[in-house]
Amino acid sequence: MSFKFTLLIKIISFLFFLFSGIIWKKILVNENKNYHYIFFRVTATLFFLLLIKFYFTINDIEDFNVISTPSYYDWVICIVTCLFSFWGLYFYTQALQNGRISFITSLNGISPFFSFITSIILFNEVLNISKYLSLILILIGLFLHQRDKWREFTISKEVFYTLMFTIIWGISFVLFLIPIKVFGVLNFSIILEVCVFASCIGLLVFKDKRIIPPKLTDQHLWLCLFMGFLVAGGSLLSNFTLTLFPVSLNILLGLVFEVIVLAIGLYFFREKLAKKDWILIGITTVCSVLLLL
Image (cartoon, rainbow, N blue to C red):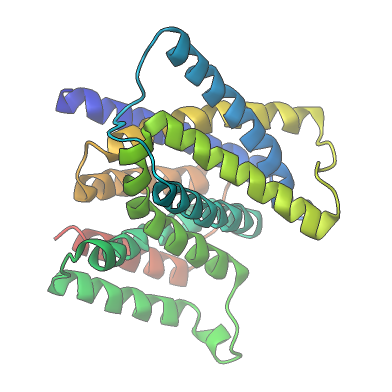
């Protein structure tokens, strides 16, 4: 497959996630529980992924990158990775519910650092000076941004939730490569959404003592259905390009995506950023560039 075509697929996946993020921000209301929305979104995503699976099956189209028959160990690694990744989505929606999409997306620019740390642990990769400098800078930036709250031994919900999903998704970014190479892109995407669905059921049983959340408004249900379509397409295409592009190129493209989301947050949502927010965004941008060196 040519580089230009693969790049086009990557851009399309970013657009899918971009629009789904905008919808998330529009429908998440502070008094409602975020996993109620996730339940309906993931149900729709599974529906579209299973439709694609059915089409592949009746037309004898093989799944992408299946190289072996999964073992018990492969299943354990896959399911644990997917369940771990769910909490990234959980904290991501919590962040959107309590913060500004422009600030959240910008701070998420440090997620590549956690990807590199995971690569060191799993694949014995070595960090160079620029990556260590990136870590030092972001720690300084976070300290300066939250210095008033550090004195009270607290941290804003916006920063806490963003850091949580940034760490989880930064680690998951590398871990996904392991099950994708065994199960294939489509099969893994379905397993991932099944685990998200199961996690939602678990939260509903544990917190709400029920297995189905209260019905949303008709408008929100249609938006969740549309998000399900966007996430199905975005996840499938993103996981596919993850196996074709090097990590550094995926990171670089992600930075471009974050700049676009920052502009959207400032323009469409009329979000206000203080001087300290811009300083942290600037430091995060510098750190993200250093991670590529």
